[in-house]
Image (cartoon, rainbow over the protein chains, first blue to last red):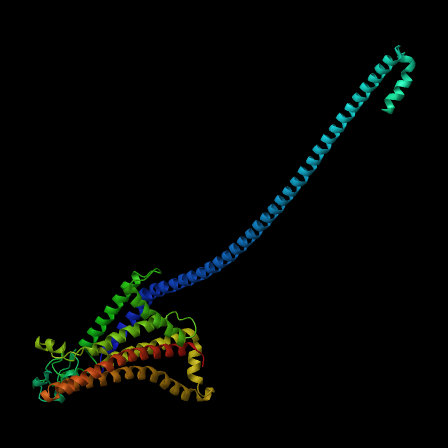
Length: 156
Length: 292
């Protein structure tokens, strides 16, 4: 417990250790720690950013999906309407066509009837002339009596 | 334990409180086993009285050896971690070292406002070194001295901080650092500060100077004596308990219980004292950086 040179020895040893620590121990260790802290902070930041991006993307995707659904529904609706329209138009067309066929057939029939009637008239007039010839035993001058004949034909 | 060799517990304790001393024994000093030293010579002190005769020109071989050895050990440990330090995922060893470094860095930042450049490594050195020297107190008191005594080494104190030379030596270096930083930061202002506080007039400069120098010196002295006092007192208690082991079988359970209790308590004390020494050093150094 005497006070002696140990005191000076300790001062020198302390000084050397402090110098050594400040020069070779502290800087690399604190440097590594601080660099790691920076790295971790950056990592956390980018993780936050990624989470935010993910949320945004999910929102976007949901919106897109919704839009697509709407669009699909619209297209379907339109198609249905178009189909109904086509069916309706088809019905109308068919009806018109039918009516047209029927009316043309009717016209044909009328024509045939008229023609038959003409024929009949012509025959009747011929018969009439022939009857009249026989009755009169004379030739009837066609030219002379054509007026009369025409009148007769019209009357029939 | 080994109290049987000694005449009484007092002698046992006194013996364990003597350092292994190598120094200049002056001519005319009394030798341990009678007679007088004829020529001045450098020698190992054979007993406390010879060591006392050596006065200032002596070394405590054990204190210096343990202090240097433990200092080199921790410096080697930290240096080996520092060499491999990287910012990636640290290994267990690097983690352990970095925990200490970060603890010291945080403490320094809390106390010292400003750039902690040179302060933090000083604090780290103090903390780990004082801690290691204190830690030697948890080694049973006779574990190392007793085998050495059988080999002919009379004295061995392994806890270097129970030697006031060691603690005051560290405190003296802290004082040098305080003065150094004061001059570096304030320049001539430091001298002015010494002369003009607490009485702000040049007429009272001598009074101020005396007061300020007393204040300046009292800080490191109290720093060194606090550590020494705590460690020395703890050591004496350990020695008392050790002496109790030798007092008879009846005392064995009591001594064992006391030993365990005191050792557990000292786990706290050695860390705390190392921490206090570190924090006070930072405080003194930060005071050196600040204007009054």
